[in-house]
Length: 274
Image (cartoon, rainbow, N blue to C red; front, top):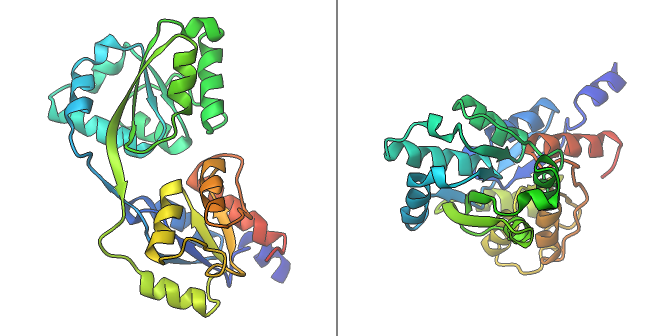
């Protein structure tokens, strides 16, 4: 009986610190709790509008001038669709474009808005996205001359636009939203638990969550603060950000989604690690 419980709820008795934006963390926290975890929130980022919607609005107004739309997050989808609505444009106007959605959550958000999706890369890393687009186009040469619209966060990795432009495509990167440090946090509670050894695992879902966490605790080197705490990163880019603060990613899922990260945390502790 005990073995079955451990297998089904491997995080029972474990406390997981979630640094994701609170409004984005419900599904992730729910998945962790389903595995038996106690979830403590300490959001280090907040999703807000860009400083100006002008570039995004201009791109949306001229969406028929593009061949492709690339969305690498549900946040980008949400803000892009809001601007379409604000401009009195119908999502049906996207029917003539090819759409690439990175990650299950992104594809589901598009499907919920009745936007078709042509490509969902098997690998969520930027390299995998470019490989999927190249394969869909019939090879690198097939990308030449195509125009891509890429709404994303204000600060994002440039691998995708550089790689596509290197193949002869044109890529317009526009800011759809920003990630900022939240005005209020649960720093005191999280800090007390960390000092008292009450946290088993901390999860980071973007480089911003890592850097803002370090800023929140005024610690360039996070290793002393997180001594004995397992570090879970959603992907290699986030893991590299963690390394900048002297942290090693103990848990790294193959797929860059919150659901996959929750499963990876559960699998890690199911094996008796930590």
